[in-house]
Image (tube, rainbow, N blue to C red):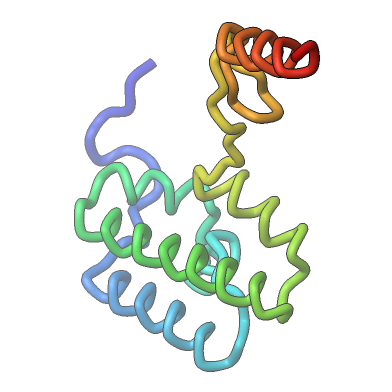
Length: 135
């Protein structure tokens, strides 16, 4: 079933919504409160799903939400490093919400993972050591 124009609850998105989002983010930073999507939704009097819908519908709102997420990321990194936030919890949120991951070092299957020496080079070195021992 498709929604017909004019049906359903009118949107709460107005011209002042953008300024209220910016105020929320600045106010959180000034007061030392971590800005969240859920906190913004409560502040605006809507559900978090509505924020995601507005983000899809309004390019300016989407950009402002990206700035809120950038603020979150910056706070998690800075406060996780200086000990104001639990390092483990900051890492968890950065991985879960900000696409940051831990990457394993790249080691090919033909390399010794301990010293990054190829098996052929290691075999040659062992032969050279053995020949020196016998002389």
